[in-house]
Length: 229
Image (tube, rainbow, N blue to C red; front, side, top):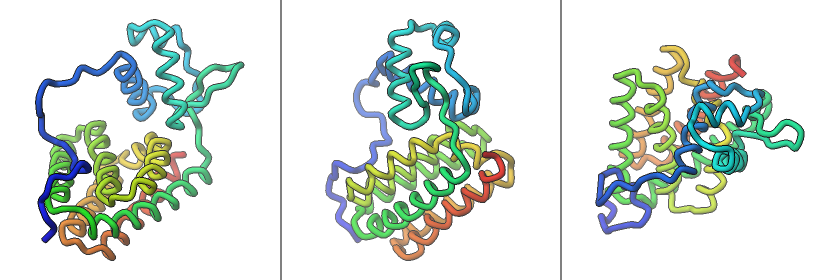
């Protein structure tokens, strides 16, 4: 058993203290990001700042700052002539990125089994259970966000910052692609089954099994999304 000492990498799932009010910038970023993930702003489409600003009830200056931030995440492309355009990935872009993500997560799984405390693994279990509640309610966007939080959490408890940083860049870039992997009941059920295996292997601290499951999860993600790109 690993010690339960306090650790700065522990995932904080409980409400502690006053609820922080998000800044206008954070609120705009979150809203536009969700619009991209859900396909309301489809790949290849140009962002009309005036229309979007009216829809969101914000002026152009904070909207432009938010678009710049989303471009830094890889969700948008900025060009002098066209402004902001929702990034469109080729099948090769997606395939290559998922291969790398699979290898990164496989390594992170091994490290997490070795370095995570029992308390940290329990926090990942809480995320998983909340995700399953969203699945039971067929509440797709909250489900997806918790799903992504689980992947991020495993990287965090691997205790390798360089690994987590590289993973974070690719994960942010592929948000929309990963989201469409849950379209349709069969694909969604397949993703859920993968996550049941992931949490089981993590709780057992079975590093070899967790590594294989995480790597295979990305391979299955490709199979689920390749015909929709």
